[in-house]
Length: 295
Image (cartoon, rainbow, N blue to C red; front, top):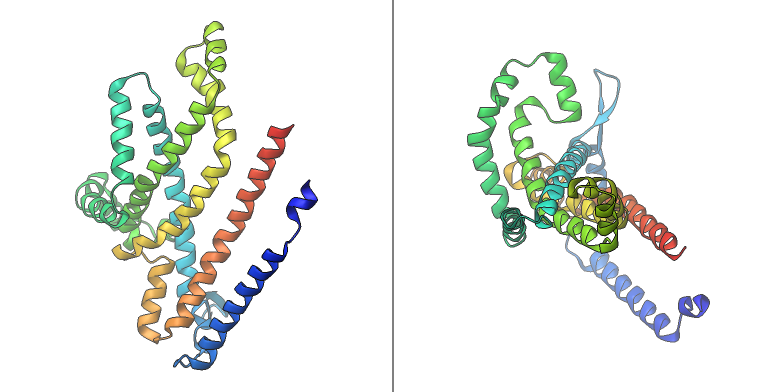
């Protein structure tokens, strides 16, 4: 059965030939007929440059942008997971008030354009909340050693406020989708699990913590990992508030070098290098879950 399902048919061969032919034709048109002067030699130094003072190669604009994208994605992903879990618990609560809170948040975030959310959160957070947290005072009095490690693991002190705004914005937006994934996982747990826990004298909170959530997270781990990949790609939108992540660096580099196609092809390759291993990991998780379910 498996062998027949994976066997290539004549139609598959014709379709593959058509796709390869179309790709070859597009490549031919780009190389031969596109009125564009390719100059890859100028673009590679923007990945790494040789620092004469340190006598070694150091990261340049595009790699620095890639590292900022990674930091944004990690911190926003963790915050989105926490917020999404809270909203999912609110949606599945017995309290009508918390159900309304959770549903209002999810529907609002899922039905607003991300760009609008970014501007709303950025201007409100930067102008109102961040000064209350004392971020500006911290930046003013920060020690050199602290500033160095802050630059390595978070952002340079001068960019800390916009970075925090970007992290919160991405987390607020992505948490709505994560909340629905977690809610689906919670509701997929059989009702008998709840009844058995109640018979053992466990409270609803104890049941959720020790029985329901572990089973739910085991089932939703692949879609959660897939949502994290979406978060990596969605992080490019914070370039509109001058966060120096990969897309922002690509835009600035294109404006200064006019190497439009080379820049964006290289940016696309860097995103692919970042997300493809994650996609492979998600696929492995899904196959592992299917195998465990079959057993």
